[in-house]
Image 1 (cartoon, rainbow, N blue to C red):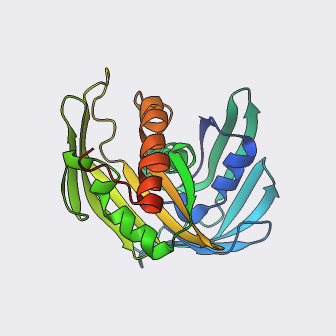
Image 2 (cartoon, helix red, strand yellow):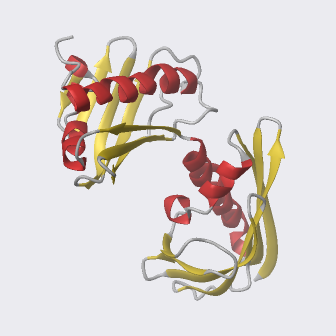
Length: 276
């Protein structure tokens, strides 16, 4: 066992305030189950993976939009009784001309044989999970329909996405626009009237120059929430981030039309893509 400080830095296109607020939503991006309340100074919370991996943590520094540090006060990995109590997890934010720079540090014990694994886990948490959570394309619309009506419309995918080029059912479907787009979606989450999500298991965007399969293993997620006499639909294409070649066209020419035009009109007016 040795003490190790591992640091990883990453840049975001979003504002410091936006990055900080997303950072605090641990339940949405940290790869373990989060148990606790809103993050703030002296707050305690728990991370857990099944019965084999547990840690209790306490926020010891909290500077809005600038810094968050928590201390691991209890921990256990039952497979080998590894205990990383005393570790500090530190997040520091700084402004950039075109966004925000974030530096994360793990400062605590690690098994000598697991130093490379520590780096891989930290990189995965920050460069993958947090980055995708903050930078993935999102779109929000409001409609004067009930959550149930909205949910049922979203499930009827061919009416608002794919049209006659869609084959399959809500559980698994493909969209094939010849010489332009092929993707295969598998249902991975379904909470009636609240949430629905698909994993894109295969994809080919023929017009890309570098990697035609950038959509593969990304997710499309719809969160539905009643808001006074309306319903809010929050869409996320998780993994569709600015560093991808396809981002600009897919985000601004693709999803902007599909969500804000096609889906909106189907829900509110009953207009569909079929037979267009």
